[in-house]
Length: 167
Image (cartoon, rainbow, N blue to C red; front, top):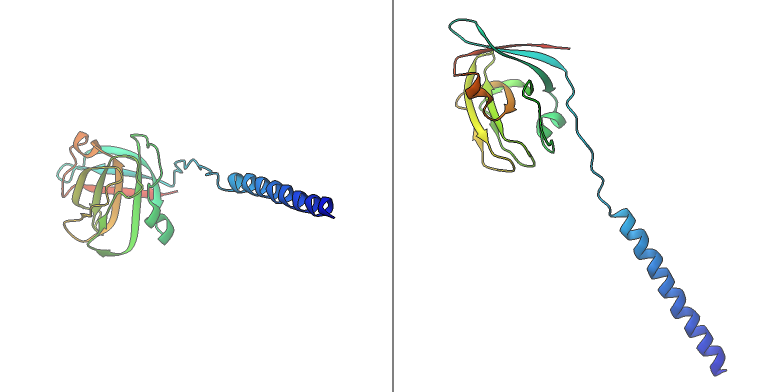
């Protein structure tokens, strides 16, 4: 009888141990993090122009954020962006805007633009992962995000204009 009890206890112990090992193995597999590479999708073109001379400062390929998901996500989780690319946020109304850099891995210039396509203000060199508020200085309907330093390189100023077309 003792042998039988010992056999049952041993089988139960080893069975439970095997189940735990399999269970841990499955748990490890399911907790692996999958990374998704987010790539630029050209959805339009944008031109930046000097207000007083109408001369072309730069031309960009743009990705457009015009729904709740894309405006909330923006350029988060991107590793880089080419110098000739940007993201244009299009809002349904004109209002004071404020952006931040949560989960954004690249430094950006954030350009606020009113409904007449005139630059209202520029937040230069916004730092990755900084959750500080970066507000517009006036009401804006559009916001353009480009790599940090480009607005200085282009000599972009308040009052300059944009034009854009959607694909």
